[in-house]
Amino acid sequence: MAGDRRATMGSMIAHREIEKVFPADEFSAVGIAGTAGLAVELVRLFQLELEHYEKIEGALLSLDGKANRLSMMIRQNLPMAMQGLAVVPLFAGYDLDRGQGRIFSYDVTGGRYEERDHHSVGSGSVFARGALKKLWRAGLERDAAVRVAVESLYDAADDDSATGGPDPVRRIWPVVAVVTAAGYERVPADELEAVVEQIVAERRAGEAGGRAVPGGDLA
Image (cartoon, rainbow, N blue to C red; front, side):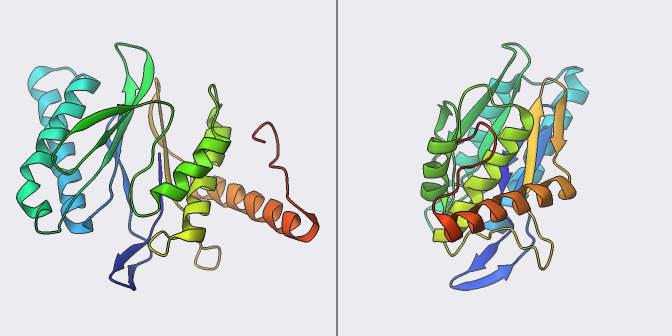
């Protein structure tokens, strides 16, 4: 899961380093789109509820249970959403019972939908989804999956003013998380910097001499 770092207020950039991807617990991640303040508060409450459940029950809530609980929390925000203060998260995690990763999207009423392969939310999601359709394939290794996620954000930022692209001058990179059977991992900044440099170099070469072919087996 990857999220850009830009928050906007109308046509203005309100913040350049906001974080939009968070660990929900040890084996799941949640990304936010919509009204930033409400979204961050929802994530904090969600994290707290999952931690409380684990302490009381002595076991992790199932991935379906986590997805359902997040759905209920979004539904409780419906009166605010009707006033234009909507929160639409993206939830994903490693299902310990099934032994696989799963993705869940939501609407403002709390409707929960399980996605296949990949998904994106937010103002730049249409452009990100177009990139994902071209770059994603089944069985991607960790490093290749990180590259695909960052490149889809790069494409979204190219066409959507509310999506912030990687900023090498300020050294601001997307927040990228990987969740596997080993748990939640935030991808280090130096690794993301190298990925961004590779993407920029390939695109610069493409502009200079025709369409560049992405490295490795991502073409």
